[in-house]
Image (cartoon, rainbow, N blue to C red; front, side, top):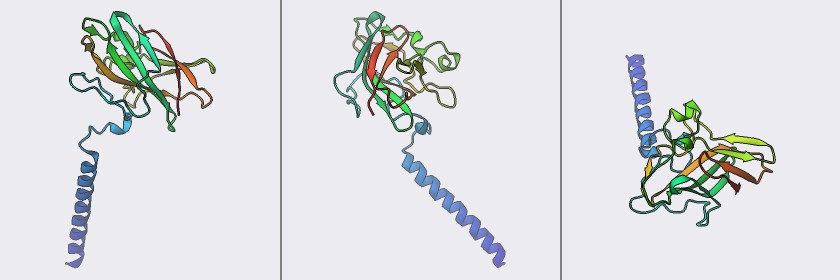
Length: 194
């Protein structure tokens, strides 16, 4: 009887420990989607600017590093290009409709790679050009082929702006400047910090 009782008690304790661990883990996650580990700290989906505007993100200044202009009043203001220790460069900015009419964000911004375009409208067509090393860096993708950039872009109302990001492999540490290119927009040279 004692062996059987001990085995049942042990299984019960293991089940209790697992239940407590899962409860603590779930509470600590705050109910996120579970994909948070794959995403940069920035917002990954397009949000409509209806009420309050987003605060300036850490490492960003009010003065943009660059402005890329497109047709119909489309404006991309780059506020930071930050290199991190994981070997990435994250470019943050604001996509704005500077025109007087509603504007459908061009699908060309997603690029023409099938794996990226099948994930919906995004900034997946962005590239960083390292003219010093003569290399082109494309937007990173997660293990399921989704671009590590803002997705879900649609129509921007006149004057509407939304925060965006793009994540790229990091050029070598001695490269302090890159050129950002997106289809249908002008290109711009950016300093990399970090």
